[in-house]
Length: 455
Image 1 (cartoon, rainbow, N blue to C red):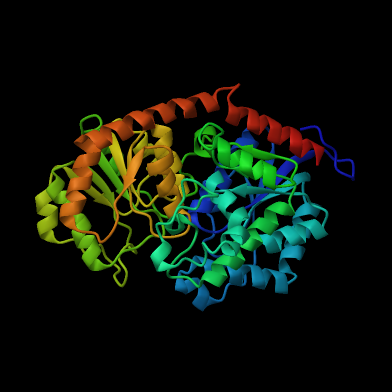
Image 2: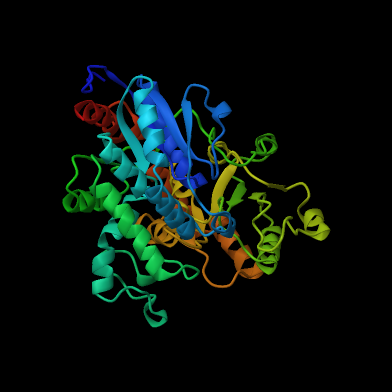
């Protein structure tokens, strides 16, 4: 970069501030790695809530920012409540201003600050200090186009969702139905609406938008966003985990790497990988049905069972009978190096909650998916997986072992699974193409560097 800030110093540094949840941290740190590989210094601003470990990134500078999240809100686990409380505390306090001003005064000039769209309070502080902001959207382009459409969705009566209309098509946003829109039955809908409106405002106030997707996957959705937004650039620069060299270096949970050694002993394409992400949960009865559905399928599987996966329990709750039934053809671990697992030749399918990172990582490796969304954008991602891209299918309704067993066999050995696998492999080819030096995502990074130089 050749830009020069007002004080005459070359802007050879970028600041990044991720939202403190695993699914948002990973893409932001991957983008930081991509920019660092282009010769930029990186300073990571981070909250004390879900704080990153600087030891995992010795090449970056780390600066803690007071987040002001009340202890009871943090303990609630409500993402919407945490986001609103954090922004409110940051707006009420001058601490963010003081920290950011100190960072700008110390070290090389900063080209810009990359923020998560959910950090409107930080965007306002940066603007007051004259620091340009860029937004990294860690979800899909389809998801953000839905954010932009939220006022219209309310105006036309799609939202708030009515039980009798859940399967009504949203004609303005095909292939979505009302049930696929960004909402959660466990959250106050007005709070969700407020968070999404603020995220949209953050983007509109910034100097550009980078989305962790690629042009060939979401062409129409990216075009829609570019028509709607009056920002300088809207860049599809993903899959960022494929452009980054750091892999899983930002995990908040300890990864069990023995699963890689276990996968090495399994036949090619035989293993079903099962993971419901870092936040999704289930009750003990659902865990039991999943366990016996997996066991009865006869399929080798690698299952991530987080310590907090089961609501009201601090253990896995899996019986000795289950472990005996799957001995020799299954492995259960608390957390996995997911990108490495999905890239392993033994894996042949993925049962996922369809968070965007998981969805994009599965597409990148050409794996078909069983989809079990819970909240946020997961329903929307599932709909695209099934109806737009044809690389998987949803497991709907109550979790029952017989239904689970049939879905697994369908994915791993059935005709529907084979068709999804073929389509997933075609998308994998498009991922490989977009990552070439003249591919769309590599060119997007080039354009991003050029744009940052002009700020």
